[in-house]
Image 1 (tube, rainbow, N blue to C red):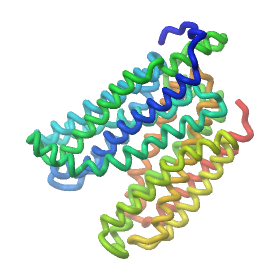
Image 2 (image 1 turned 180 degrees about the vertical axis):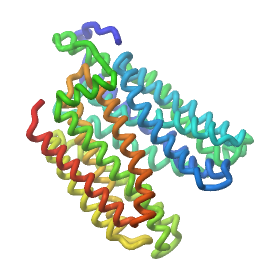
Image 3 (image 1 turned 30 degrees about the vertical axis):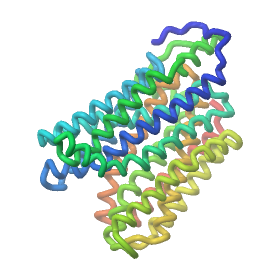
Image 4 (image 1 turned 90 degrees about the vertical axis):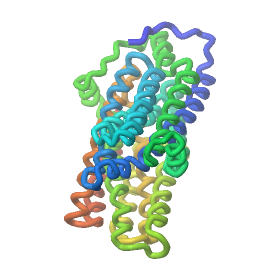
Length: 423
């Protein structure tokens, strides 16, 4: 565990917090560009290597699973060495994974591609864990806002990354590698830049400084990060368990519906224009809902309560599922609004539940519990994404939305626990 010493009295914690949040926003943008640029072509590269689409989806599945597994491991690194070390490991491993994906395209190896996308998942995990780093030094009534600003910065990467496929192809031709590997060159560049940025700017480490301050107040203690211990902490703190349930449920709802929406549009044919253009517009509206309003959501959480925003998030998610589930196949205004609200409901639930988790758990337990929470969230998302295809194939897109609506009740249940439990 990191050596805990008394923090120098002259440290301006507010100034350090402002520097930390600003630095995390930049690393989030860099990491987001890296992750999303590779995501845009991973399945296409897999299909070109295999010669058929049958197993191509495994590339994306490996990235989701990699993010889930890396979340818990990064939590352990952060507990032992601080946020800076954990984020550097996450982004750096992602850069190695991107290099492996380029190599996979050159040598035409599907196993190497899967290993590469699995490693890229650690950069996703680092981006997710960065939201918690923003809360370490924040005042209790500003935690949600700090967390939400880092979530909002993801917008830059999510919008810019997928548009690097064409420049990536040009870069690949210049390097003499297959065109589809070019996007992974940007993945490596973005994640390694994020690694270097964190190494330079995240000083002092916010978690280490927070521990030093807690030690000076006589509040620190030993940190345990085993999965068994994390489960024990969640049993001791019902509000923390409710936060994990809310974020996992909301994430599963969002992923399951989002991954099947392009197929729903494709089945019906475009109402006007090109199918791919309509898919792009609908998913752009979804991304806008996910990230653009996060700072406002964080401000409301700090001013109102976690429980009220969780209720709002659940209601918005239900409205989204009703609209999307009832939308005809193909492009439609109803589907456009439904996917926008799906992103907004996810954002409200994620920001509120993440802030609740920070509030509900003592400082010494936070890194391990936060890593465990993101592990559960990632595994739920991977499972939901896999089951979504089965549900749509057998019962249709409306049935998928109806099934997802049941999960929204978990978010409402978490709001009830957040309001009525104190421990």
